[in-house]
Image 1 (spheres, rainbow, N blue to C red):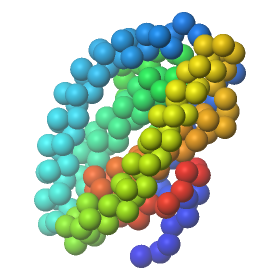
Image 2 (image 1 turned 120 degrees about the horizontal axis):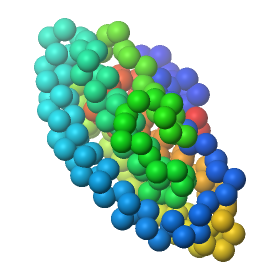
Image 3 (image 1 turned 45 degrees about the vertical axis):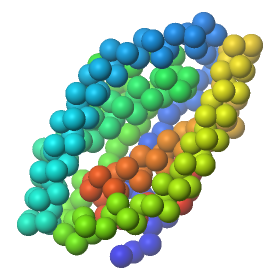
Image 4 (image 1 turned 30 degrees about the vertical axis):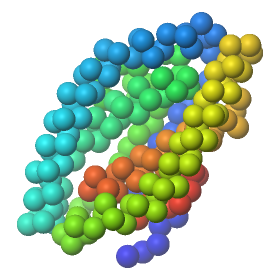
Length: 194
């Protein structure tokens, strides 16, 4: 398997940096996200079923059926939009849609023409080193988010270095998720970089 660098990994995730944010929305974004969370909960159940079907499809055909792949990527895009909103990175309310380009968040996964039928048995095991590191990075992202909340309250700005760190942690988590959920065979890089 060819070595992947962070810049060539077949998953793209980024959030446009906002120049100014509302100091009052930071108090209610979690509440405003509830309708999205309800829909995403139902969609995530459906996506789990789709991944179960895809596991067998990959085992027998070495392919992730395109329609099922697109469904899982679209659910992940909707979730990425909502995460950017709840993590205070955007003030615009996310659309009730998974169509690309409707929000200031980029989430794309290249469709693989062929997947390994044997990796599907061990991807969860191979993802463990990433999950351990992500546990600590997510704690750091929570601290960064807390500091950003205070900064937005007083300055109406998300400190750009903290913003880039939180986006990088989200990117890392999304790459590991794409790998362990069978969307890609390339092992994700240990990197926050795009």
